[in-house]
Amino acid sequence: KIMSPIRDRDDDDKLDAGEKLLMVDSGAARTVFKVGEFLAPVQDGETVGLRTITGQTIKNYGSQKPSIVMSGGTTATMEGIVADMNKSVYAVSDGCDHGLTTVFGPNGSFVTSALIPKPSGAESLQRIGKQFYLKVKEIEVPGQHVMAAVSDDVTMPVVKAVSYTHLR
Image (cartoon, rainbow, N blue to C red):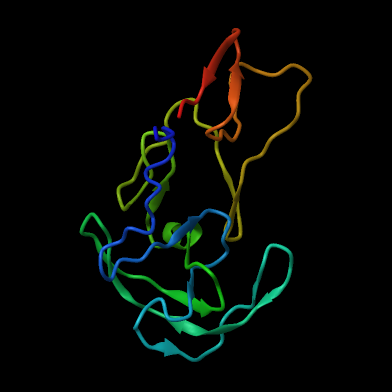
């Protein structure tokens, strides 16, 4: 199977002993660990109320500060809320609040403490509270750039009558 250029790997179930995957979410308001994800003690105390995107309440059990090492060797103490979740979630806004930059791109995605200058022609995201938004306005005639989700089975026309097909 040929991989899509925007996917790093499909083998998320092939982790070394002790490794865990935290879903990185730019829309998450808080970093949240599923129950039992880490061994660090869970601290009772006042935590923020958590809700799903549909407004349902998520039960939480307190906060936790596990010491972690990332695959590149960076060590950190990560703070999160322990809650009834299917996956643990790293909130990009929490990283920003602690001096980290998170980059998502077709050439790779990463977290770094390096300050990365905004490239010319880049579109700004607007932060409101703990979430990020892309401000847009619909126009009558589309511009030169196409932004769309691309799946493995989609042929996507590109401006100037050129087409790009993902191959398997």
